Structures are given as structure tokens and as C-alpha cells.
Length: 478
Figure 1 (cartoon, rainbow, N blue to C red):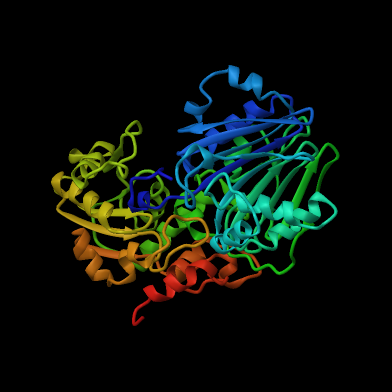
Figure 2: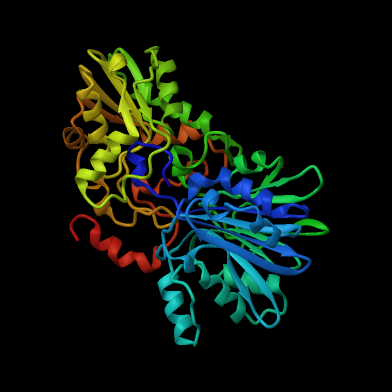
């Protein structure tokens, strides 16, 4: 995911889901919903439509607008239900085989499947399934669910799906489309978001973020909750549970970085949460300065909060070029650094001779923060004080963010002052864990109000399964 030029541009979140049931122009609405979720994945996109019980799909590599560039594609995707997916890979390579939704045609059934998240026992399950004769056509962990569904001995598809959902572990939001219904399911901790809405004609929509509901004119109905399976068909919707062993632990990076600021997750507006992060950060880490500047785009809200709380003016000191391609794919470090300068510019007329507070959402490896600090210094900033609107990232994610080793995290083995020196800032402070929990303000019946804090304190709410041995070996003194 690339929607910021802050350090979190090194974080990549895997997918966005959009499904609709009961609308005569389902595929085109799915296209618009996917455009609203483009920030969640930019490697590939696909749509499967249900036309009178027949499923047909189109998919390709690239942005939604590139994959679905011709109106003729929507003629082939005619139907009253559709499922769409935008992808960034955390499991599986970037080939067309892994672009979703995956469409399966069996002798007795057609099923389209889309997934947001990462399974922590995928390697073990795949080995078992292949040993039993399973043949995989992709190397994504998404396909595992379909093999488990087909191996279930339950007498109904819903029963088979529940069996499969109880076998997979980790973070998952699944949406499945069949000729008869659409199914939406969320893991027992709700690591990834999934919301439901309804169109004015009665059609139901599910999407990874509420911004996609609003973009397509759907009214928010409810969040899909941990451990639930929501079944949507011509009769409306009903809610089932595949497990009651739940403990909410929503990924904090949704609030810090990934989600669009106009989305709501578990009743919390993303912009409001980020603004409060900045305000609390100003309370916890004040510094004398002439201006506050946010790193575009996801840190703008936090910078606004810091400015208001500190009463230091919020200025436009960094400008993002919205039309430059991603920089992390450049083959050499020199080209990547040049790419950062192409994508982000410091405004000399604003920062020259000034003491600047640079607010960013996170520091991962430290390289991007160092480049941005240098940009400000090259533009004449007298001082650069870095304030990070999240706690130090010390532990990897195993639930859907593409950071699965402590070696990738500068805060894992360095003190705050060592990081400050590495990025070249005059001072560096992070938001506290308590401040983050207070800023997000979830009110769920779970530790930290239902906010996952494992990336900061290493207290994972689930076994790590296939990742555990490597993770334990990466800890100090091991």
C-alpha cells in the first residue's frame, strides 16, 4: 500500500474487498468501490459477476483503472451480484495466478473467493492438503480455504465453510460469491475490517472500508464482527457464527496508516483518531518550534492535531507529487532516493530558517525518515524535530502486513536516540502505547479496548504457528 510518503510507505497492506448482491449494475458499482479501496492494494484487481447463476470473471495486473479500462469488459460482467478485489501480496508472488477473486468451477458448484489478511498456519495446511492429493493453481494462501471447504463432510455449503474457517488461523476477512448467495466472514479477532451497507434499491454491500460504501451510495448497516459469517441472498441477510471463541484485536495500523481518513472502523472515524494521536503526542512530547508540518498523506491529520494542541502553526512544508510511480521498486538505492525527491518536495519558502516539527505516522526501517529530514535540511530548515504519531514498531506482523521479521524494524534493536541519530533529526519522540489506545478510543470488551498492541509490546493474541520458530530465534539472547 502506498498512500503516504512517510516511513509507512515501507509498510504494505495486502488487499481490499468489495461485494454487492441485488443490483442490476453490480459489476460497475464494484469497480467504483474498488477504486475507493485502491490504497489497500495496487498490484492487481479482479471482478467476478453472478449473472442468473453463472459466474464470470475478469482480472489483471495493475491498478483498477488499468485492468478495467474498457467498457466492453462490463458487458461480459453483466449480473446482479459481483465480488471485487484489489491486491497487494503478503503471501504468494505477483503473478496473474494470484490475482483475486479466485474463481472455481466444480461439477456441482461455482464459487468465487476473495481474501484480505494472512494465515499463520498456511504452510502447514498446504503441505497437509498436497500430501492428501490437493493440487494448487496459485501460491497464495487464499486458495487453502477452498480446498478445506471441498474436503469438509458437512452436508451444506455453510457447514463446509464453517469447518474450513475453524481450520485456518491468523488474520482473515473472506468474501465468497456463489450462484445462490454471498458470504462474508471475519476471523475471531477481527484483525482486518469488514463493513456492510445497503443501497437505496435494497441491494447489500460488503467492503473492507466504509469509504467504499459511501462512494457507491450505500448506507452503513453494521460491521461484520469477529467469528461471524454473514449470508446475503435475495431474502436479505442473516448472521451466523463459526466460533464464539472471540477476542477483538483490531490492527492498529488501520488507524495509524492504512485506512482512508473518511472511513470508520468499529465506530471510530480514522481522521478523528489520527488527529487525536497528534494532539496526545503534543502533550507527551512538546518542543519549541516555529511550525508543524505533516508528511503527506496519512500524517496530515496527526499534524493537525499536534498543531492545535501545541498552538504552533500548521504549515505546508512538504508537497507530494501525486503522479509519480512507486519508488521502492527501483533497482538501486540511488534511484530510490531520487524517486523520493521526485515524489516529495520541501517548500523552501516555508521552512528556510525555521524550527520545524515533522509529524509522521511511523518509522519502520528509518531510511525514508532520514531522506525526508535531509530534504528539509537541504531546503534550509534550522532545526528538524521528528514526532511519530504511533509507538515504536518493535515486533513484526503476522496478520496481513508485509513485515514478518524483527530485522526489518529499526526500533527492534535501537534506542530512540540511536534512531534519532540514524535519521539525522534534532530530536525524536514517539506516541506512547497508552496514548495510542486513548486516541483510538475503542470500547470493545477486550484488552486495550480491542486494539491489537502486539507490534509494540510483542504480546500476540494467537499462536504464531508456522512463524513461531523464526520469530523466537529473532528475539534477543536467542
